[in-house]
Image 1 (tube, rainbow, N blue to C red):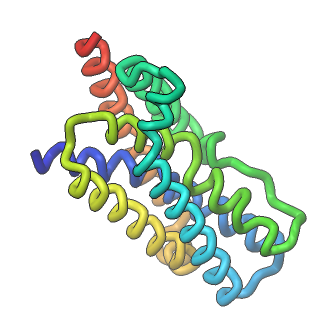
Image 2: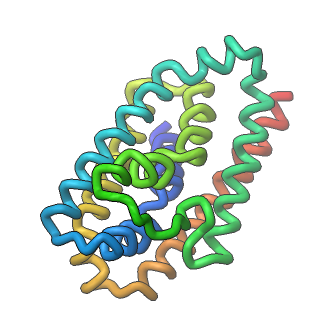
Length: 199
């Protein structure tokens, strides 16, 4: 049972794009000429908005699928394929396209909700992952805690992104992200195969 929730945590953490987001956030902040205090203000607000959106999806997302008449097993297979695609992009690109957003010329307040919170933090991958796991026969409390922990650790890392970049270096972070992509690839294949078995 513990293994299932570890997989949930790992999948959510990788899908949140934590490591590539370090580079993207820093690039956007630098283009605006922000100091460390304003960077952290933006990160706090962005993660709050992203987490609240995720919470709504966690609580009501599967009801929406049912209302729309979408088969949860079919969605699981399609979602697994989408996660496979994201994992493949992580392996072949330094900055995957799902988090590769050009620098913004807008003001700080304009970019907090979009693109920082959505889609850089809570994007299509996070939504798909949440709907996949909430459609399974898992303990919702443990599932909520696993996914929330992924958000928390992602937040801590992004909040300290400037320091992490200085200490770890971009190259080492990219290598670590590719290792995560390989793990995600295996999890995505498992989701696809289990969905096919359900059919």
